[in-house]
Image 1 (cartoon, helix red, strand yellow):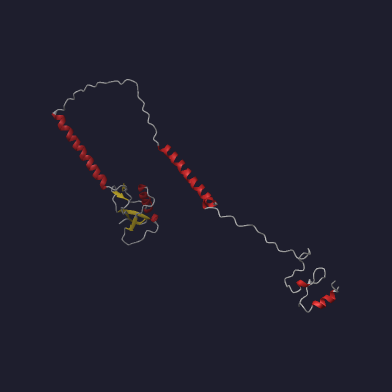
Image 2 (cartoon, one colour):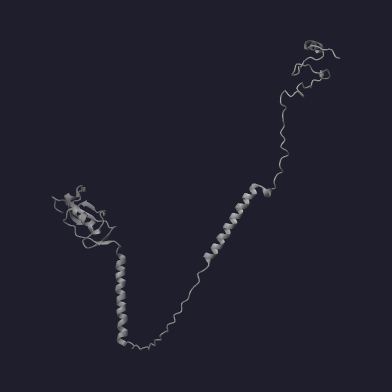
Length: 236
Protein backbone atom coordinates (compact mmCIF):
# COMPACT_ATOMS: atom_id res chain seq x y z
CA UNK A 1 0.00 0.00 0.00
CA UNK A 2 1.55 3.34 -1.00
CA UNK A 3 2.41 5.91 1.61
CA UNK A 4 -0.18 8.66 2.07
CA UNK A 5 1.40 12.10 1.67
CA UNK A 6 0.00 15.52 2.16
CA UNK A 7 -0.05 18.10 -0.60
CA UNK A 8 2.87 20.00 0.91
CA UNK A 9 4.94 16.87 1.27
CA UNK A 10 4.18 15.84 -2.29
CA UNK A 11 5.14 19.27 -3.56
CA UNK A 12 8.43 19.20 -1.69
CA UNK A 13 9.22 15.75 -2.96
CA UNK A 14 8.61 16.53 -6.62
CA UNK A 15 9.80 20.16 -6.69
CA UNK A 16 13.31 19.08 -7.58
CA UNK A 17 12.13 17.04 -10.56
CA UNK A 18 10.31 19.76 -12.64
CA UNK A 19 10.76 23.51 -12.62
CA UNK A 20 7.07 24.43 -12.82
CA UNK A 21 4.29 22.75 -10.92
CA UNK A 22 0.88 22.71 -12.50
CA UNK A 23 -1.91 21.81 -10.10
CA UNK A 24 -4.86 19.89 -11.39
CA UNK A 25 -8.41 21.26 -10.93
CA UNK A 26 -8.94 19.40 -7.64
CA UNK A 27 -5.56 20.27 -6.16
CA UNK A 28 -3.91 16.93 -6.95
CA UNK A 29 -0.44 16.72 -8.52
CA UNK A 30 0.02 15.00 -11.87
CA UNK A 31 0.48 11.30 -11.77
CA UNK A 32 4.02 9.99 -11.67
CA UNK A 33 3.96 8.84 -15.28
CA UNK A 34 3.02 12.41 -16.47
CA UNK A 35 5.39 14.41 -14.29
CA UNK A 36 8.02 14.79 -17.00
CA UNK A 37 5.47 15.20 -19.86
CA UNK A 38 5.24 18.93 -20.72
CA UNK A 39 2.19 18.35 -23.00
CA UNK A 40 0.12 16.73 -20.22
CA UNK A 41 -3.35 18.37 -19.96
CA UNK A 42 -4.65 18.45 -16.39
CA UNK A 43 -8.17 19.18 -17.67
CA UNK A 44 -8.39 16.18 -19.95
CA UNK A 45 -11.25 13.92 -18.89
CA UNK A 46 -12.36 16.24 -16.04
CA UNK A 47 -15.22 17.93 -17.88
CA UNK A 48 -13.91 21.42 -17.05
CA UNK A 49 -11.43 23.79 -18.56
CA UNK A 50 -11.54 25.87 -21.75
CA UNK A 51 -13.73 24.78 -24.63
CA UNK A 52 -11.65 23.30 -27.44
CA UNK A 53 -11.58 25.30 -30.68
CA UNK A 54 -13.91 23.96 -33.34
CA UNK A 55 -12.98 24.08 -37.01
CA UNK A 56 -15.90 24.43 -39.38
CA UNK A 57 -15.70 22.32 -42.48
CA UNK A 58 -17.97 23.39 -45.34
CA UNK A 59 -16.71 20.81 -47.71
CA UNK A 60 -15.08 21.39 -51.10
CA UNK A 61 -16.14 24.48 -53.11
CA UNK A 62 -18.82 23.94 -55.74
CA UNK A 63 -17.58 23.32 -59.26
CA UNK A 64 -17.50 26.33 -61.67
CA UNK A 65 -20.46 26.46 -64.05
CA UNK A 66 -19.80 26.29 -67.80
CA UNK A 67 -19.91 29.55 -69.80
CA UNK A 68 -23.25 28.79 -71.43
CA UNK A 69 -24.90 28.48 -67.97
CA UNK A 70 -23.50 31.74 -66.55
CA UNK A 71 -25.61 34.85 -65.99
CA UNK A 72 -23.89 37.12 -68.52
CA UNK A 73 -24.53 34.65 -71.32
CA UNK A 74 -28.27 34.61 -70.56
CA UNK A 75 -28.51 38.41 -70.58
CA UNK A 76 -26.62 38.67 -73.87
CA UNK A 77 -28.86 36.03 -75.45
CA UNK A 78 -32.01 37.92 -74.44
CA UNK A 79 -30.67 41.20 -75.89
CA UNK A 80 -29.74 39.61 -79.23
CA UNK A 81 -33.11 37.90 -79.46
CA UNK A 82 -34.96 41.18 -78.84
CA UNK A 83 -32.97 42.92 -81.60
CA UNK A 84 -33.73 40.14 -84.08
CA UNK A 85 -37.46 40.23 -83.27
CA UNK A 86 -37.63 44.03 -83.73
CA UNK A 87 -35.81 43.77 -87.06
CA UNK A 88 -38.27 41.14 -88.31
CA UNK A 89 -41.28 43.25 -87.26
CA UNK A 90 -39.84 46.33 -89.01
CA UNK A 91 -39.18 44.34 -92.19
CA UNK A 92 -42.74 42.96 -92.26
CA UNK A 93 -44.41 46.34 -91.76
CA UNK A 94 -42.02 48.01 -94.23
CA UNK A 95 -42.97 45.57 -96.95
CA UNK A 96 -46.68 46.21 -96.33
CA UNK A 97 -46.21 49.97 -96.61
CA UNK A 98 -44.08 49.81 -99.76
CA UNK A 99 -46.61 47.81 -101.74
CA UNK A 100 -48.23 50.02 -104.39
CA UNK A 101 -51.95 50.51 -104.16
CA UNK A 102 -53.97 48.56 -106.65
CA UNK A 103 -55.13 50.82 -109.44
CA UNK A 104 -58.78 50.72 -110.37
CA UNK A 105 -60.01 51.45 -113.88
CA UNK A 106 -63.58 52.55 -114.39
CA UNK A 107 -65.11 51.97 -117.79
CA UNK A 108 -67.85 54.32 -118.82
CA UNK A 109 -70.62 52.20 -120.38
CA UNK A 110 -72.33 55.21 -121.98
CA UNK A 111 -72.22 55.28 -125.81
CA UNK A 112 -69.83 57.64 -127.57
CA UNK A 113 -71.37 60.25 -129.86
CA UNK A 114 -69.71 60.79 -133.24
CA UNK A 115 -69.70 64.35 -134.61
CA UNK A 116 -68.93 65.03 -138.27
CA UNK A 117 -67.39 68.42 -139.08
CA UNK A 118 -67.40 69.73 -142.63
CA UNK A 119 -64.56 72.10 -143.50
CA UNK A 120 -65.62 75.42 -145.03
CA UNK A 121 -63.17 76.89 -147.59
CA UNK A 122 -61.76 80.29 -146.58
CA UNK A 123 -61.56 82.85 -149.41
CA UNK A 124 -58.04 84.01 -150.15
CA UNK A 125 -57.30 87.70 -149.54
CA UNK A 126 -57.08 90.02 -152.47
CA UNK A 127 -53.98 91.87 -153.59
CA UNK A 128 -54.96 95.02 -151.69
CA UNK A 129 -55.43 93.15 -148.40
CA UNK A 130 -52.11 91.34 -148.78
CA UNK A 131 -50.30 94.65 -149.27
CA UNK A 132 -51.99 96.56 -146.41
CA UNK A 133 -51.59 94.01 -143.60
CA UNK A 134 -47.77 93.83 -143.58
CA UNK A 135 -47.50 97.64 -143.68
CA UNK A 136 -49.70 98.03 -140.60
CA UNK A 137 -47.81 95.31 -138.75
CA UNK A 138 -44.49 96.93 -139.57
CA UNK A 139 -45.70 100.32 -138.33
CA UNK A 140 -46.88 98.78 -135.04
CA UNK A 141 -43.54 97.03 -134.56
CA UNK A 142 -41.66 100.27 -135.16
CA UNK A 143 -43.76 102.16 -132.62
CA UNK A 144 -43.32 99.41 -130.06
CA UNK A 145 -39.57 99.43 -130.68
CA UNK A 146 -39.31 103.20 -130.12
CA UNK A 147 -41.39 103.02 -126.96
CA UNK A 148 -39.15 100.25 -125.64
CA UNK A 149 -36.00 102.21 -126.38
CA UNK A 150 -37.40 105.27 -124.65
CA UNK A 151 -38.38 103.25 -121.61
CA UNK A 152 -34.91 101.67 -121.54
CA UNK A 153 -33.22 105.09 -121.63
CA UNK A 154 -35.25 106.32 -118.67
CA UNK A 155 -34.35 104.93 -115.22
CA UNK A 156 -36.83 102.79 -113.34
CA UNK A 157 -37.58 105.62 -110.85
CA UNK A 158 -37.90 108.78 -112.96
CA UNK A 159 -39.90 111.92 -112.13
CA UNK A 160 -40.65 115.20 -113.88
CA UNK A 161 -38.84 118.20 -112.43
CA UNK A 162 -41.27 120.86 -111.15
CA UNK A 163 -40.68 124.64 -111.30
CA UNK A 164 -39.38 125.78 -107.90
CA UNK A 165 -38.16 129.28 -108.88
CA UNK A 166 -39.50 132.00 -106.59
CA UNK A 167 -40.36 129.61 -103.79
CA UNK A 168 -38.97 129.48 -100.31
CA UNK A 169 -35.94 127.16 -100.21
CA UNK A 170 -37.49 125.01 -97.48
CA UNK A 171 -40.76 124.73 -99.42
CA UNK A 172 -38.89 123.77 -102.61
CA UNK A 173 -37.01 120.99 -100.83
CA UNK A 174 -40.23 119.67 -99.27
CA UNK A 175 -41.91 119.71 -102.69
CA UNK A 176 -39.15 117.57 -104.27
CA UNK A 177 -39.45 115.06 -101.44
CA UNK A 178 -43.20 114.90 -102.02
CA UNK A 179 -42.80 114.35 -105.78
CA UNK A 180 -40.32 111.51 -105.28
CA UNK A 181 -42.27 110.14 -102.30
CA UNK A 182 -38.93 109.98 -100.49
CA UNK A 183 -38.68 111.96 -97.23
CA UNK A 184 -34.88 111.53 -97.32
CA UNK A 185 -34.29 112.83 -100.88
CA UNK A 186 -31.37 115.31 -100.62
CA UNK A 187 -31.13 118.53 -102.66
CA UNK A 188 -28.27 121.04 -102.64
CA UNK A 189 -28.28 124.84 -102.40
CA UNK A 190 -25.74 127.60 -103.20
CA UNK A 191 -25.51 131.36 -102.86
CA UNK A 192 -26.66 132.88 -106.17
CA UNK A 193 -24.62 136.06 -105.57
CA UNK A 194 -21.37 134.10 -105.60
CA UNK A 195 -20.37 135.24 -102.11
CA UNK A 196 -20.34 131.65 -100.87
CA UNK A 197 -22.74 132.18 -98.00
CA UNK A 198 -24.22 129.13 -96.27
CA UNK A 199 -27.98 128.63 -96.06
CA UNK A 200 -28.15 127.96 -92.32
CA UNK A 201 -31.93 128.54 -92.06
CA UNK A 202 -33.55 127.41 -95.33
CA UNK A 203 -36.78 129.28 -94.66
CA UNK A 204 -34.87 132.64 -94.88
CA UNK A 205 -33.78 132.00 -98.51
CA UNK A 206 -35.63 132.00 -101.82
CA UNK A 207 -34.92 130.05 -105.04
CA UNK A 208 -33.65 132.10 -108.00
CA UNK A 209 -32.81 129.19 -110.36
CA UNK A 210 -32.38 125.44 -110.39
CA UNK A 211 -29.85 123.06 -111.99
CA UNK A 212 -32.54 120.81 -113.51
CA UNK A 213 -34.93 122.72 -115.76
CA UNK A 214 -38.67 122.36 -115.17
CA UNK A 215 -40.18 119.49 -117.19
CA UNK A 216 -36.98 117.46 -117.41
CA UNK A 217 -36.74 113.92 -116.03
CA UNK A 218 -34.64 113.22 -112.95
CA UNK A 219 -33.95 110.09 -110.91
CA UNK A 220 -32.72 109.24 -107.46
CA UNK A 221 -29.12 109.63 -108.67
CA UNK A 222 -29.70 113.13 -110.15
CA UNK A 223 -28.02 116.00 -108.31
CA UNK A 224 -30.41 118.93 -107.93
CA UNK A 225 -29.00 122.33 -106.85
CA UNK A 226 -31.03 125.41 -105.98
CA UNK A 227 -29.35 128.83 -106.38
CA UNK A 228 -30.74 131.16 -103.72
CA UNK A 229 -30.61 134.59 -102.12
CA UNK A 230 -32.11 135.89 -98.89
CA UNK A 231 -35.76 136.79 -98.80
CA UNK A 232 -34.90 140.50 -98.48
CA UNK A 233 -32.64 140.38 -101.55
CA UNK A 234 -33.31 140.41 -105.29
CA UNK A 235 -32.16 137.56 -107.56
CA UNK A 236 -29.20 138.55 -109.75
